Image (cartoon, rainbow, N blue to C red; front, side, top):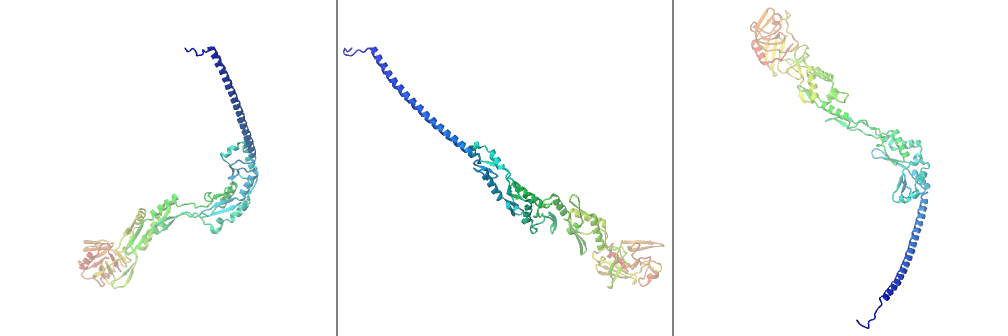
Length: 498
């Protein structure tokens, strides 16, 4: 240990440190007190400022709320009119202005438009205080919300107008002028060259005046600015349109029933049953479909018979010498239509839509279907001349004397008519009262009267033999000529006797 080093008293050191700490603590406390004072002062200042802001905002809020006690909120609209920040009176002025400028646009068929203006119908505004009520309903203290959402009001503006003026306006509208009115027409079926077709409807422009008036009045009362007369059903439209189910069914039925085209041939002559004929035979049922009137078809066939039948009728005939004679009715040669069978066949053909040429169904036929139905193969017999001729395909192949019925005994050969050969028979025996005569060639044409050979009992022909020694009515013919005729003619060949 160094003797010069001072010796410290430990108690003294402790007291000195404590003193120093007390001094330091006092200083720190003083600093903290100053800081606290500063913070309290700052808080007072901030609180004062905040209170000031709140007071200012409250004053502003209350002031604006007071403002909106008599003004509509920002973004308010009544019947589409912008009422932002307007008073009740200002809104009413706008409503009046809007009504005074009211125009109703009327859309018509075909793109035409017409307009009606407020003065024309004496439209005026009647204040019913509805705007005032809307203002009263406005919650003025909720004005801040108006900036984030708009408010739209719809109200029926109370107006008045003159209905008599509406009539006067309508009188002057273009759509009611006679020259502009097109009458509506129903879709219909019409015949064309190619069949029946649907002619589309004509919508027309004819209006129901009462409906138009009601639509205009309703529009004015509701404040509408545009209406469509077509959409409102104001037109007098056709009742049958081209897509009508019944009309199209009728069309289909008509075209089916008139599709047939049948040509009846009568030699070089013909009659056509086509659409122009069939249409007059059709009967429309309750369901719209068509059927044939069978009585009319039957009558048509009957008329064919009257025009083309020749059976048993008069015949014009050109004799071997070129002279013309008229043969009386009553023979059994010629054409005769089987009317029942022909009618049935025609009805069936029409129902089936047949397209063809055909002949009627005949009861009796002749050799030619021309007006001269005798044709160019026939037998000609002259009672007065007691001669017979036979023509084959227009060429004379036989010219022979004959003996006809015994006049003195009343066995006259039927004459002045045309008959048809009914049969052809070889080696026949002709029997009658008191006789039985064998012949080689037998050609009956009128019951038991016919042409046959007679060489077994006759050696002479012609002259006046027939008056006293004639046949029982038959035409006695030399064997050779009887054979030629027998081979030349067919059953049904005409035999002309005069």
